[in-house]
Image (tube, rainbow, N blue to C red; front, side):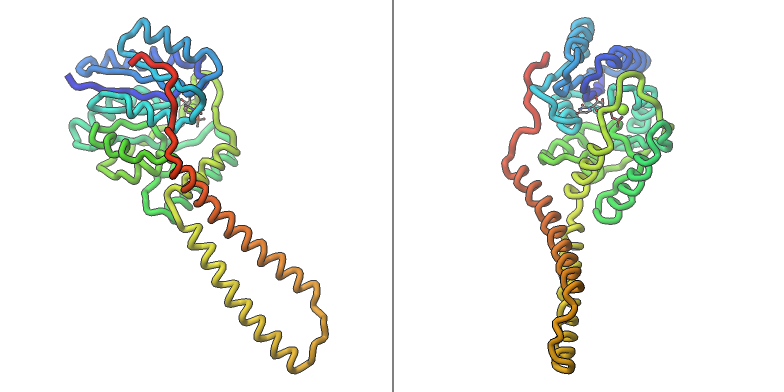
Length: 309
Ligand code: UDP
Ligand code: MG
């Protein structure tokens, strides 16, 4: 019998986990032609998530868990789940039921019958989300697709089902600064996109603030595009050209009219502006340098404190 692994990152999800488990169990009973395992990755929760997980694992031997020594982030949790799972088909989904488990049979059918390697999902609405967040998310996807050569779909969720072959390719990418949406795009393969309407969280609260999302988007840009470096070089070249023109103009002016020592305010303005551009460029370079620094250290992506595997 073929086996499906469901990888679920969990961070402070004590309220929603039992509901999630019941829902997924229903689907798995419907899909009884498959073996299954649920891999719950406890990402250093500070509430009773681990206890809830242990209760589930005790009553159901298909429930496996991995518990981190601290919060390492959703990206690390997904990677850990991917590493530990044993299925022929691997699904990854949030524990808050915003990724409808009811889509899984259809996703499986698309892989088995239509020959796709991977079935991914995309939200077509962003109801209940703050307007400003949706606005910036849209802009981010537009920008990302312009400046990087991997395809990143607007509204893409991490929720997807893939074959073992696709998963192995993803596991080969063991970089420290992980941006899954880019990694999924990078590995390629034949991917089918399933659109669905946004679903509200079943219980508990979102773990992402606007600021965290903003930082995550910068991570995405620096991980999959070096265009900002090119931009800062281009701006630098532009300013060199302008300054040469200005210097020539000043020399001619001085030769014709003599040195009048006027123009102090404009000098200050120019100095301020140019040093601003320099700082920005150094900042961009610093971003890449710091990512390289973290990558070179080769630290583990996560540390497991306990598991039942
Ligand atoms: N999550 C995690 N580690 C974190 C933050 C979130 O494992 O540091 C998990 C969380 O438990 C959930 C999923 O990632 O299963 C998505 O989080 P959330 O629902 O808070 O994000 P949103 O749906 O609001 O984007
Ligand atoms: Mg959610």
